[in-house]
Image (cartoon, rainbow, N blue to C red; front, side, top):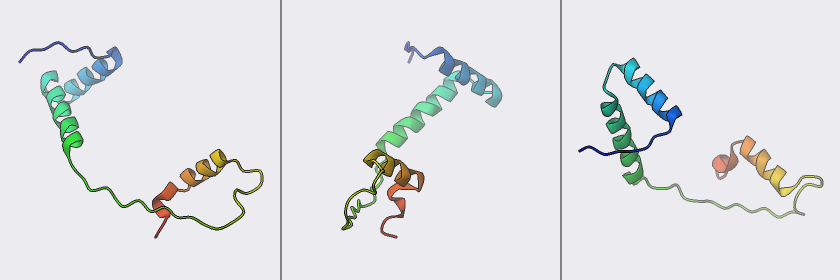
Length: 84
């Protein structure tokens, strides 16, 4: 089936370059990319359980804003380490 789709110049340049590097038609490359995207969207993977941990205390450390505390937690791996 033929259809018309608008694709940004930068992305189209990258697609053409990759197709040349892989020595395959651009159509094949785009079809493969769309299949992978659809597979990713339709794949049902179980979500890990959410654990919310609370601690007793006096609140935030003086001089540290809630945003700074979140940034520090994210820099240290976020909630990935909770419960381990």
